[in-house]
Amino acid sequence: MKTKIFQKVGLLGAATLLLLASVGCNSEQSGKDDNGNSKLIIYSESATYEGPVDGYMGKYLEDKANVALNVVPNSVGGSSRFETKLATGDLGNLIVFTSAADFKKAIDAGAVLDLKDELKNLPNIARFSKAVDRVKNSFGGVYGIPTGVSASNEVNQIDPVVIPSLRFDYYQELGTPEVKDYWDFYDVIEKMVKAHPTTEGGDTFYGLSLFSEWDGNSVGMAQKVAEAYGYTASDGVNKYSFIMPHATEDKVENLLADDSYYLKSLQWFNKFYQNGMLDEDSVSQTWADFLKKAEKGQSAIWMFGYMGDLNFNPMNQDLVKQGKGYKRIPFANLKAAEAKSSTVGSSWFWAVSSSTENKEAALKLLDFFYSDEGALAYHLGPKGLLWDINEKGEPIVTELGKAPYETAVPEEWGGGKVDDTLKTMFNGAALDGNSISPILNAPMNKTTWKSYLQDNATMLDKNWTKHYDGVLSAKEYMVKNGRVASYTVVDVPNFQYDDLLAVKRDQVGSIIKELSWKMIYAKNNDEFEALKKEMIQKAKSLGYDECVAFEEEAAKVWFKARKAAN
Image (cartoon, rainbow, N blue to C red; front, side, top):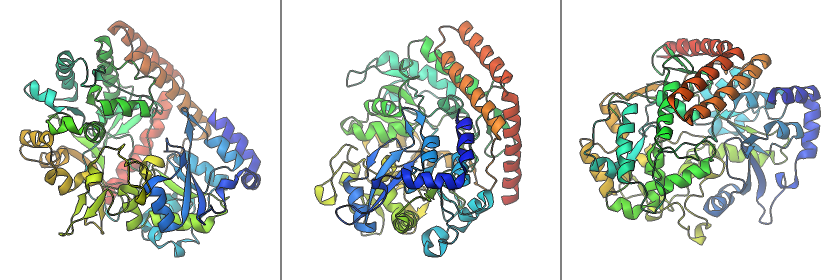
């Protein structure tokens, strides 16, 4: 188990690990390429891509920072390589941590640099003093920088992930029936699937498609309904496994409590299965598989709402021009939990490996990522390619920026395809893309721009806007109607399970995840209830209540801190 491996690593001691690091670094991790660019490896816990940062962003970084990047993802086939990489010192030059526990292990092993003496030469990082202080206070040094930082705390303009998207043209065919709550989507979807059993391309049109690759200690997608009702799996600093604190009220959702949103979501998923409308690959398909189905429009509803707007619609522009495609549906009692842009950053961290031989280049690049220019490049690419600024000083999307993701980029820009972004490759936004860029005087997220929402509105967009009283986005509608439970991310300690409780957490999580998926695929209600009873009994016997009590104490700290901050 992970804990046991770490205990063995701990016995080696920091000095031994650093010795291993000097041996474990391969030649790609140091030196320069044939063009004189410093070669750097980014080891990312959030990446699914492996290979060089090439194409137009590779050329941009060569021209701007004289670096040639290679990305190494943490997970291969769903299995983490972190413990092995830590033991061998093979963490690259720059690291994206999505786990505070892994970040702490790397600190204890001496595998990441303390940047406190480097800050004077890192002006872009140093300006986010609250984020820097948070790491210093939580971990005893500036061993990394939180991702997703912002100059201020503000409600963003982006549509929340948890507002589902539906085939809006099919919804109109049904007369746009009122959807009072999340569960009401089922009846609407059932009618859609009966009327349209296949997609325009001839593929099966499911009522619901899920995926399992991102599951932690439960079925991740079964938590999304609770998020649509004001609960959150993260306070912005910590991630919770078995509870979901409310974003604005001092209460928590216990995943296995009677009538919890988690258990109701599993039953809702099972209803799709029992009636032949669930994508049968849901339990086994990867994120990449899931995306392909989104691009082909193989589900009536996408619980991650952006998969309709940003995956199907751009790939099917001929249909969109005819008013066919996906749009967000803010149901009547929606109250989406959402973190404001944050001056203290998120629960992910950038760090610099202590074994890097290209320290100066690594630090220079990291500081560039935290600059306004570097943040724009991360989120939007080079100015003039996919975006530009018009004569009024407003950001606009170029013709190439409107093109499908697979569209080729001209060789003079570096080639590749439109979707070859830094987010696609290593997924570690230094600055929050929903925050206001002083260069644009607008958010870096193009989907909030007037040029994106209005000037280039399609027939599909116009039909949706007409139905929702003239608003241009779901977020505008939600703010207007009080449907957002937004919260400020405050500086709270990173809570850590002790070794014994961490073992219990992993065992409990494993059984919850296993039996939750079995419940989704239960053949009838009796089997579903029997599996639910088995899951709750086994989870409690393994220490579920102890884990919940620990997380509830952490939630109380958050509740107290946010009251003090408001």
